[in-house]
Length: 263
Image 1 (spheres, helix red, strand yellow):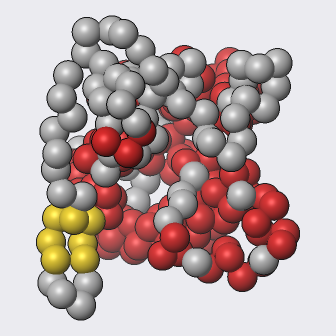
Image 2 (cartoon, helix red, strand yellow):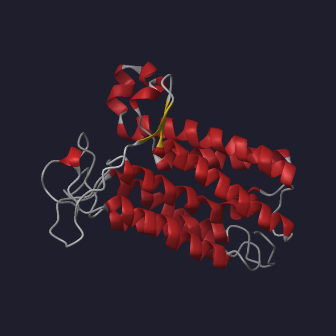
């Protein structure tokens, strides 16, 4: 298949360029905010509209800071050690989902404590909204022609201009479908009824971890890292393992038998 040449710059104002990838973050936050307001109006969200507006801004900070720090720690360790200031070279690009997730977890815990809400309850309310941003982010990767898949001869393989002449799996679209659309549908349905605190969060961690682990088999490993274990495991797969383990623990734990409205 022919790669659809889309200018990664959505808007060029001369003094600043707005990329589609950045806009996808904005669209994801707006969509998540809209769905949160819907559940607030239904009485199925532990925050008020005013609190949610404040929370959204803090979440954005957690995603950006955590994503950048995580990328440098997990994927550019040598560069970070050699030049610690490279952490702030944001114009060079580089964000890691797992770092962003840790940033969001930290912000959620702090915000919940600030407003005297149980952190897991707030986390369960937030979890179904995250896949929207994940899916849009992967669409942004596809538009930018980055993070492509491995060489393949499947009928829908695509030749990415920056990846050479060989057709490859459009792994960005696989992730958009699985980590975005499918995971959102599962979590939105699962959280529509009362669950034990931590179960929605646990299902998110399991779902994302399993989908990411699977897609990594057809996604091109990072060029500077390659396979990090047994000539098949990638850094992305390694980082999903603790997610899945924690998710299973949260989902099956029976510390509290009483059900609580968490979404």
